[in-house]
Amino acid sequence: MDAASLRPLGVGEILDVAIKLYRNRFLTLVKAVAVVVAPVHFLSALVELSLVEPLDREEFSTIDPATGLPEVDVEQIWAFVAAAIVLGFAGYLATQLATGAAFRIVSATYLGEDVDWPESLRFARKRLWALIWLSILMGFVIVIGFLFCIVPGIYLWAAFSVAIPVLFVENVRGTRALKRSRSLTKGRWWPVAAVVFLGFLLGVIVSGMLTGVVELALGATDSDIVAVVVGAIGATLAGAVVTPFTAAVATVLYFDLRVRKEGFDVELLARDVGVAPPAGARPTFLPPPPPPPPSAGAEPPFWPPPPGWRPPDA
Image 1 (cartoon, rainbow, N blue to C red):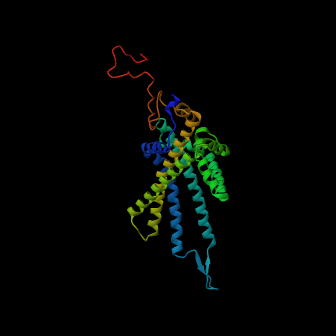
Image 2: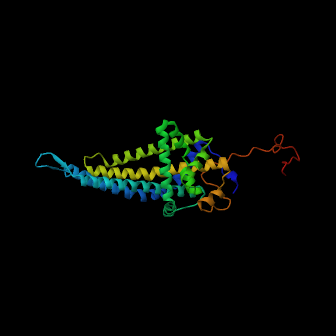
Image 3: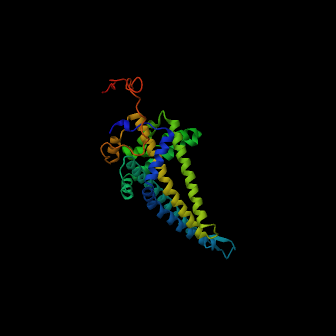
């Protein structure tokens, strides 16, 4: 495969390629994410329901006969706090696993391969703990940047935007992945920031629309049970739809940066990701390259050509 098959893309082209990849494998991506995040959301809903009902019945407090004042049942409250912490961590793990699975599907689709969602989850599971450590480091450094003066945090947010693709493609982990991401985005910060911001904005809009549609479909209700169930359904749909799109944007952005700086081609990508594209294949979703300029003397001096005129190549 010629390296020219992959060419640098503009901001709009990167988003366009990400959307096309996302639409083509929409069902597979949604399955890979939903099968991981849905159980966590509904377990959280069960815990929330078990918390709301006792609060409504005032079971967390008893009246002290000596003082006549309510006494809070601290043990029950701490039990629910512990459950919320455990479920929050489980949700975090599920999100990281879903992100890795989405990356695997998007990368393979970029090469014309058809990867199913179980295989993508197995691929992501092998790198799950490295992904967790990378996300913790990235979050910590960005938060420190925001605390110092906001501007460093914004800079690092864009500079680290391809750290996760670096981890999955190059198997570079921890601080080295952050440094590698910053190196790739160096000199391209403004276009990278534009892509990341627009992708984030689109994700927020779609997430809000989905949540609103679910709430309208089920109707307003005063029932706590219905409200909690609706919230779990909306959160699951939002995660299943937005997480793959975010991964698609980051993946295409990462490939574009490598094309620009390292002459990255499809054969190298296949070797790194672990798939084998057909011989002569070209990424389906890339915009076609511009036609080459005509060589000097390739056109006749006038039309119809004079008798005996032949192209130089002939």
